Image (cartoon, rainbow, N blue to C red; front, top):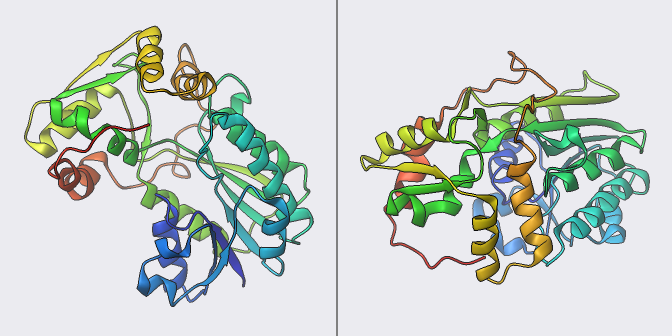
Length: 298
């Protein structure tokens, strides 16, 4: 079985690649800079140096691959949704021109709305593009990554999180390692065909208020959370020089979940994964918070 993994050094990929290696697979990893791979991993994988937005290069790289784990690369320019459209086209070409039979796609809760969820609209576009290929496709609709808290280290050190959602509104929170475990199982299994969606919701739905309490207990320091108006968040981002399209993309990810949004896939044994936020916070977040504060950048 030949398996390719994109963004192998990302939050999920850095767990998925070793899992596949332990399962006896020598994965093909696609990334711009192989220097980001750990030396022990580098010797156990095949590497394709490729820009995932370059459809020609991607199609060539995956030729002969049976299964592909596709992650849209994080947008780096001023127009995130335009980059997502390029990523969607590359993913589709990997299937149609590269001859990939099966794709597991790292999507997000909210992609089922198709429009109105900021950056997640880009993931929805990739879902649509992959569905149109006729290949066997599984979309992993993941909850909110624990690791997103790492982008708020300075706020956590200062004892105050600022969010756009109501602080008592629950949502799915998930460990990237658990997503990798689900992905590995699906990539290694030959027991599914067609087009499917599988939610990865973590162990429990949590509100920001609950998250703040869990993090405070893990760190042993107070942590509060407050909801701020969308206009205030937009003003802050604009002051850092973030483009209008980037602001719409970032703010839209929260605004799209306001109201009576309910994930398409309910919580069940299929969508519930084991790692708790408290476990992750003690093991991963606490050491990061105790590092010297960094300069904020966007």
